[in-house]
Every structure is written in structure tokens, then in C-alpha cells.
Image (tube, rainbow, N blue to C red; front, side, top):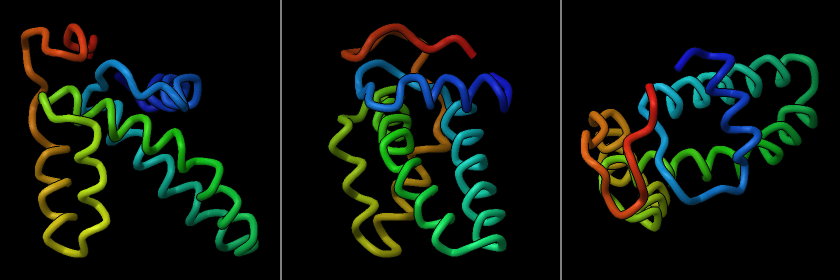
Amino acid sequence: MDFKTAIVTCLTKYVDFDGRASRSEFWWFSLFQFLTVVVLSFVMSLLASLASLALLLPALGVAVRRFHDIGKSGWWVLIWVLPFIGWIIAIYWAVQPSQTESNNWGAPPAV
């Protein structure tokens, strides 16, 4: 999945917490979110805050779908709340390859 496709997919499925998301979809959207907030912070901090708020649900949706892709429950996204250890575990899981077979959340995503 390329950069543009990942952004369009995540923004159209912004409250869809079902299904699976590929590794590339998750990381491309994370890059988009980071770049958007950084660029808008140079313009005005209020715009960066609004962008962060607007991208919160799509980011949660793609994170839940990414965890589904590796066979974890979407509730594991809450591990981000734990400083350092939680972040390390969540990043480790986010970089894991997709399960090649179907799991409780559906068939593997098309890459």
C-alpha cells in the first residue's frame, strides 16, 4: 500500500474498528499524521492542535485494525497509556508482520 492509498483508506474508515490493517497502512498513516502536525505547528499551534484532534479517531482506528492484523485484541491499544514500557511493546507489535492466515478479525489485508 502506498502513501496516498493508506491516507485515503484510514480517513474513509476513520471510525471502523473492525477488520485488519497492513503494516504499511499503519506506518504511512502515522507518517502523514506526524508530518501534518509538524507542518501546522510552524503555522499556528492552534491548527496543529485541531489537526491532532481531527486525526485522533482515524489513528485509533488504524491502530486497532493493525493489532487485529497480528492477532491481538484492539483493546491492547490502551498499552500506549503506559509510558516507555507500553510504548516499546506497542511499537514492537506494530512492526510485526501480518498473520498470513485468517483470524478472528477477517482475512489478511491486501498489501
